[in-house]
Image (tube, rainbow, N blue to C red; front, side, top):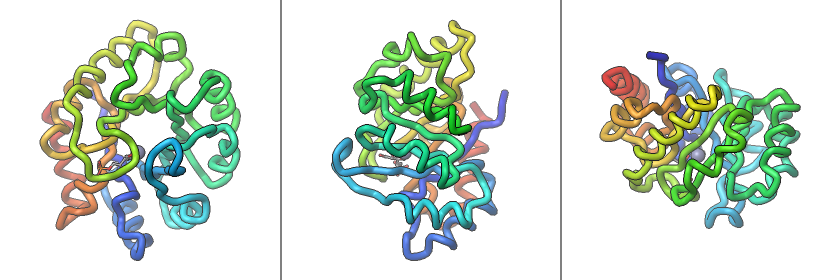
Length: 221
Ligand code: DX5
Ligand code: ZN
């Protein structure tokens, strides 16, 4: 089985010690940085914007996986590419012309991701799955870290895996929200490739060790 990817969510880092927390991820077994951008319109919270991402990029030695929880994301695609984004994920629910948006992301050289809210069925991606590099299944309602995992996600992972296989598509499956040691093995077994973990990693005593533990659980799947 392909090695799974752990992507710590910087939303749960200590912003007063951002460099320290970024270096922890650099030194860890995690492969990506997950960066949550919230605009207070698409979701009921505001996180951080370009100057903070610029500061993160300065220290991060691993790919930046940027998750946009904003309306009309097309306005900022080039900006996030210039900031050093490797993967740019937009919400299905925020894009009227999703195909055009994905092409615009890929034209910058970034990988193109699509996130689905918990209530959005996987089937909405039927006509576009082959154009997507990463599907982010939200396993909480977006807007906040530290929420409880929604168990219906397991079913959605299986549906998505079969949609990808039946189209011979290449999209990676990412799970975002409430990921802990209690659901990592089952998510991996169902077909998840990337696990985003915020509070479970950063609120633990030894975040690097927690990342190793999560990875070991993915291998038990
Ligand atoms: C939620 C964000 C998540 C969040 C995950 O809107 O998209 O990436 O930071 O945090 P935890 O792991 O604490 O649920
Ligand atoms: Zn996220």
